[in-house]
Image (tube, rainbow, N blue to C red; front, side, top):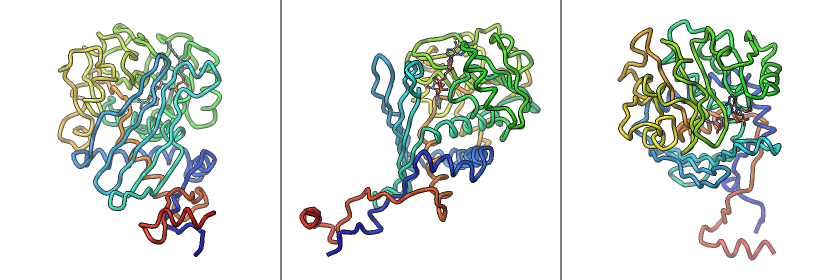
Length: 348
Ligand SMILES: NC(=O)c1ccc[n+]([C@@H]2O[C@H](COP(=O)([O-])OP(=O)(O)OC[C@H]3O[C@@H](n4cnc5c(N)ncnc54)[C@H](O)[C@@H]3O)[C@@H](O)[C@H]2O)c1
């Protein structure tokens, strides 16, 4: 009896190293644009998915979450944390990994790092929202919060929406300098700003991706002019928001999955029935996005499981016939399915 694992026991595993190779093989902007398309495809069949708000385990310093969903054929989940204090300790605020499985057998089809993939998919999601909601011809974005997520956000609106200029601001000038350095030579005009007011000057799009485990006021009402589109990405947890309530009250609010966003998003500041539009309905054309040039549109993005499912599905498709994964002996799969013990015994 061979002790070698059967091919069915093997699960393709994408390490951080291989994810980076895959992204460069495809090209960062192409990768993000492809993810945006994958998200749009899955949002277009929104009603087919199992949907549940993510399951969070909160502590005083952060949150660890599980984000599952299924379209009936494939099942995906992501493990992700959010620890704003981590950055000060030399650790990432957000780290993640995930699994894609076959619903018919329950066997995993992919196991992958998702820290990079989450940054890419979050940027792709904001770009999808921006594409559908920003004023036509929008060319300048203010990027407030210049941490790990920021470069991805900037490249995504370039790749998907044709944004040419990004105006950067962070309370820590070193973060802004890092972001500007990383974006150099990538085809964007990059302006480093010293105040949030300076950053939003002339911007038709404002993206906030700051991290603080608190109700922050990154933007006040007087800072947001008519016709602006806002992606508020950093407020994604109970008790963690970025916008003054008056902006939320004035804006047309677009969300991923209302039961989750009402707990985690900017709208946690509002009444439980505060009107929102679900983005999938805009993507499918069932509802209009922006209705007038003066309207302030707000994508209250918290990150939803279907976006991770899209990313897992995309990576699973793209690693085929590439060297960018290894097979992991992850599933115990005895030749006789009832002889799990025998397999263990023979391994001695
Ligand atoms: N919505 C989603 O899908 C999604 C996905 C990933 C991350 N996030 C959230 O996005 C946020 C950013 O993530 P990250 O990985 O870039 O975090 P990070 O810790 O790497 O960077 C956050 C940056 O925000 C800056 N900042 C804090 N307060 C600020 C303020 N008042 N004004 C301007 N800048 C300020 C910090 O100096 C830091 O540079 C986090 O809150 C994270 O939880 C959301």
